[in-house]
Length: 109
Image 1 (cartoon, rainbow, N blue to C red):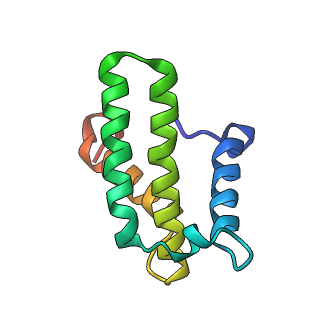
Image 2: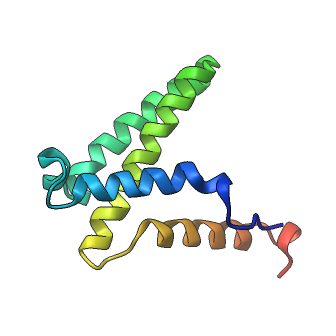
C-alpha cells in the first residue's frame, strides 16, 4: 500500500529544501563547490559510520549516521539536478521500481 502525501514526509521535504538552500547562490561556499564526484568519499565514510552504529545496536548513533547518509544522497541528487542529470526524486522512484521488480511474489508480475 502506498502512503498518501502528507506530513509524514515533512522531515524529508525540510531536508531537500535545506540542501537546495545550501547550494543556492547565497548559500554555503563549501556546499556550492561540491560535485557528485567530490561527494562520493563523504557518502562512503558516512555509510561506514552508519553500518558501525547499526552493528553496535546504538539507536541514537544509527539515527544520526543514517541521517548523514541521507544528507549525502540528497546533496548528490541536488547537484545532479542542477546539472540536468537526475534528481533525488528520480533516485527514489528508481529504487522503488527496482524493489517492485525484485519482489514479484509481493507485487505480482
